Every structure is written in C-alpha cells, then in structure tokens.
Image (tube, rainbow, N blue to C red):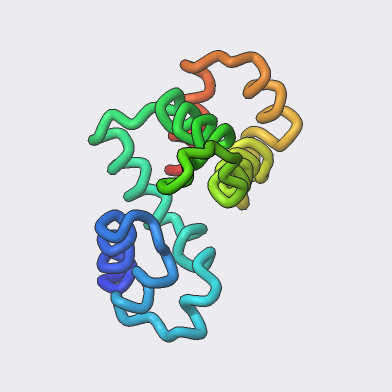
Length: 137
C-alpha cells in the first residue's frame, strides 16, 4: 500500500465515505479523483476496508438494514407536518443495494452475479457475511 492510498483510505473513513474528496485531500489529482474506482478497486483499499469493517463489528445485516431503511425513507415538512416520500434518499438506498447485490466483483473468479443474487435471495446471513468479507479482501 502506498502512502497516498493509506492517507486516502483514512480520509474516506473520516469523511463518511466521499472517496473523491478523500483522494484529493490525500494528494491525488482532481482528474484521478474523478474516477474513485482507481482507489476502491485496489487490493489495498479492499483489504483495509475489510479490516475496518471487521474491527467495528459491522455485519451484512446491519448494512442491509440501513440500506433498507433508506429505501423506505420519508420526510416531514417542518411547517405543515406533512409526511412525504423522500425520493432522493430512496434512490440513494436503491443504488447502494444494487451496487452491493448485483455488481460482479472485478478480478473475482469465485462467485458471479447469478450466484450472488441466489445467495441474497436465500437470506443466509453467515454465507452472505463470508461472501462480503471475501469480496472486500
């Protein structure tokens, strides 16, 4: 892992997940930061993030509950009290779920999209947790 990668990953954790901003703060050029997958697809990023998740006892169940909550988000108008659908948050939750469930890992010869969909439908938390940590390492 390079010093720049290490700094960028630390910045991602500290800033709540904005990879592009973290990369710029770590010294990457704005042009490189426009393509955050250059960092997020690196072995160093996957290994470090997997380690961070494990050390904070982050489980797939917690992650999916948060994504599920976002997919059902509502907002309340502070003046009228009216509750409406929060389309922006719901869309963000849907995008996160799609990324997690349906994107085939690059460089992976283990499990493809079809197998991942089948596993997600089984709701077997132990298998799913093992798969996530294997994909992130």
